[in-house]
Image (cartoon, rainbow, N blue to C red; front, top):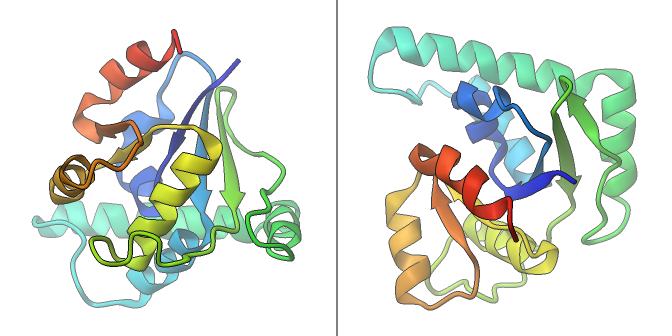
Length: 168
């Protein structure tokens, strides 16, 4: 059985260690975060502080977009977009990784403390009963402060998250 995490699409592109696992992992990705990839690709705003790193990450974003646009993957995603909270069939990334795109709908449940994408990540986590994986320390602090009933891990603690959720 695979370990599951809710994550934003850009983090899958940025953090290579998420794709280098030795056990099955499923990343549940809200569709709006897939749309964000296009904004990152077209935008002039740097994603990383170092120019070399930024160029590398933007290439990885382009690669992920191209992968999502492959006919079979695109069909899987489009099918999920017909109904709120529908999930795509698994999109495979190698032998151990699968992505599931969820047509998350922000219902402003946490709108006071979290932006719409963060809210969709939280709601997907609650609905799927899967921990959130993020690199946003401020978001982690707000989740804890607001006592949102989700498990959350910093991406720097990914190995620990894999070990910690293996027994759940």
